[in-house]
Amino acid sequence: MGLVYHVANAVSIALFLYYGMACLVADGMADEFERYGLSRFRRVTGALEVLGALGLLAGYLIPTLSVLSAGGLSVLMLLGLGVRVKVRDPLLEMVPALFLLVVNTFIAIQASGWSG
Image (cartoon, rainbow, N blue to C red):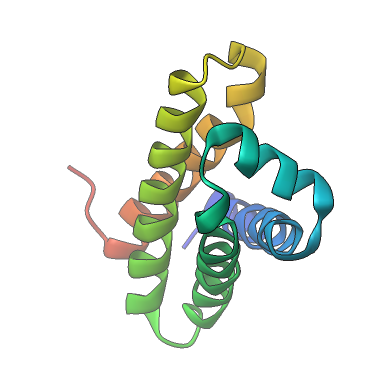
């Protein structure tokens, strides 16, 4: 795999570890999930983000995990974008989820070997 793939993977791992841990422990994220009306899903979301990041890391040993993890994280970001649209957040606040959706879709496609 090329340099762009490895950089995308490293960025995704780092950001999902950060955001996932924030979902699990940060008061600010608790407030955000409450604003979304999804408080009961905050810890599940955080756990899925951390597990997805670890799956991307483990994907270097078991390549199928890269495809599954990146695909799952893409779905999670698509759902996150839907929530942001529903609560009418400004476009600028949607950029991180959109960026991570694109990055993880790229990772999933590259790791699967599918090029269209």
